[in-house]
Image (cartoon, rainbow, N blue to C red):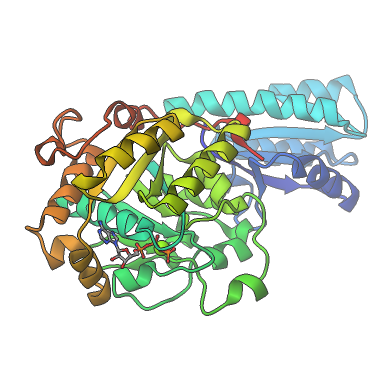
Length: 406
Ligand SMILES: Nc1ncnc2c1ncn2[C@@H]1O[C@H](COP(=O)(O)OP(=O)(O)OP(=O)(O)O)[C@@H](O)[C@H]1O
Ligand SMILES: [Mg+2]
């Protein structure tokens, strides 16, 4: 199922509202919205008007007639059989008497999630693919990889909607790669998470002339240490909304395993761990692999990419693969003058040097991601493409592994 479920609280008393908030607080996948109203969410948690129950039933009935996909959980202070019967008759499937206990509430949420999941299966939501890029260390080319793959994909396939997300909250520089002014972004979304929807996300996207969209980090200067903290679930919820808006979302996670990165790795359909064959970078990549394994992360969707590869590194590569206990997926050719001049000009490789070998490598891999090129042949002409089975799995829908959390 997709990442999160939006909830509207329709309560008469503050105590019931607080109780819902407390019970929902431990369910990270449920997001209480403060604006928009009951017709804009997946689930409405409502409190019965005990004096005038007909009023509650009439408004829920109206809601369900117009929005039959909405799930309603109703609570009331008693268990009057007449009231319960009426609730079920108008389509309310979850009824909890007060005081609500956690066990019953959690069970109701689970049933509700299952029903939403089956409805979602029948819907035709866009369901874009999320690719997360995590650098083993700083300065090894993670952003270059994310930007140029996204741009190549966009270039190859104009009808695909492609977005980049800058979640490098320590040192975000994606605007530089695309010559865009630093502006609002993820941090602004996170500050106002209850407003999160496609319209809000759209209003914060920076647009490159190629029509590649960028959600900036929203960071200017050294805010990471002084700015507001980012609420848990913010990255997850943002990506969930974005995947309904775009065909491909490429996320630059920088090189630290902070909570936002963990949420992204959890949610992504493909995770690219970027390293070079320098010893510090290999060592750090190995450490990340350890941490991910200990956290129960789904290794099936992880691909290791070696940046700045040169043929004389073949032996080192073999050692690294032994250490990783995993084959390296992609080997990105080393071309510092080309990569750095493209970055310094703020022009992606496809525009800066369309015929360069490095650009051709990017186009080849982007074609696989776009599904335009048979998975087997892409990159093979350069002798640098290494692993395809994982990319085949990239098409197999999103994994949302609760195991991988925390
Ligand atoms: N394939 C490549 N060959 C040679 N140099 C490269 C290659 N890819 C990227 N570089 C260069 O590596 C440097 C760092 O790149 P980049 O900013 O993408 O790294 P990063 O890992 O995102 O760094 P940061 O930790 O600052 O976010 C840049 O000068 C870039 O041009
Ligand atoms: Mg970077």
